[in-house]
Image 1 (spheres, rainbow, N blue to C red):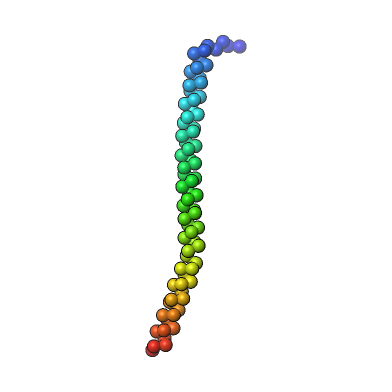
Image 2: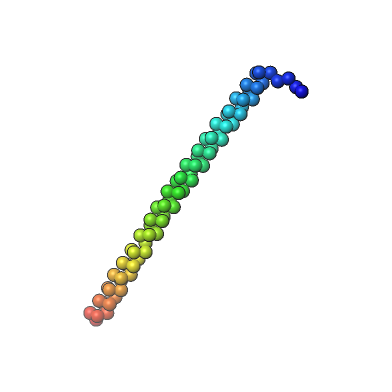
Amino acid sequence: MEDVTHKQILDRLIEVEVKVDQLDLKTGQVVTAFNAASSAFLVLEWIGKLAKPILWTVGAVAAFIAVFERWNK
């Protein structure tokens, strides 16, 4: 078995720590992206919940206007 010096072990440990730090940074960016996407989907859900009553209201107003215009002719 090859003898490994303390310096070699320390150098290798430093390399591994750098890689772990880089991986942590990238993972943090991915988590941030997922959180942003989650928030965006939450907003889209709210818009979807609001769209149905708004469309019903617009449709009812349009129907009322159409009936009113037809009646006044």
